Length: 301
Image 1 (cartoon, rainbow, N blue to C red):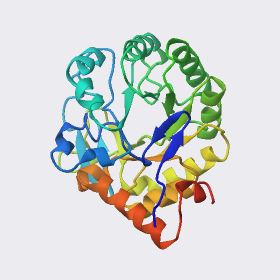
Image 2: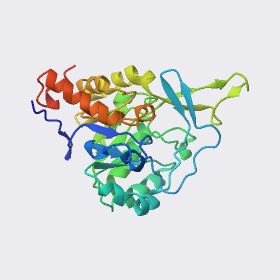
Image 3: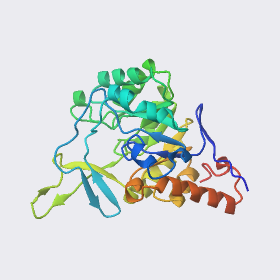
Image 4: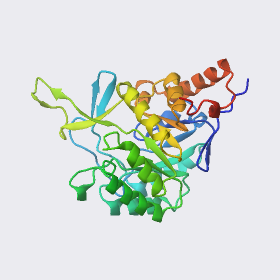
């Protein structure tokens, strides 16, 4: 039985719904040495900022039951170096290229998006979970007013498909998703990591210099699934679902909750071939259940 795995995200067609999440796949080079990554649907780049960032000092990754805590601090080469050194590699791949953009201020976001919008990329993922320096450390995506402002301003400077990545720590994630839609977003991706912490009881202090860090992995999956389901029921634009997806059954759950595409993150650290194995599992499931197209099961719950 031939299964149709193609999905349409706004006007962008993916050959299958499997996307590698930002920050867990680099720019694809290392994983391309392990398996044929062109079998995937797309890659979301490591989070990029206007200028190069060295990231946070101290411990950056800490394993915790059923997940990891990270405090990497958006270490990245900056958008210009990405264009110079990495984009050609990505463009040669038969994959949808999604560029993840973060920033500390609205002006930084605007300039970074403007630069990337002049390049041959397929989509921008606007990460509004980054610290907003001018708002006293609050993230753009936590409050409705700041989310509305940044999406409105970014929409003015790019014609590329615009996906807004939401924080699960938002005051009201459904309302913020609606605000993004109202201001011209073409899609939503969720969820980013949850605020969490770890304490070193021998040293009697927090593990991370910033005290708090982002929790990802299987531990967050049931909450992420609920949030994706809530958002999918309340917006008309497509959704990329993520948060603790480690196998094909998890992926099917997110699709049944309404996600058009799914992103694989922490699972790549556990199993470098996770994306390929999840894709194969979805194919088997569809054949066993005599499902001809992903559309038959999307949002059925």
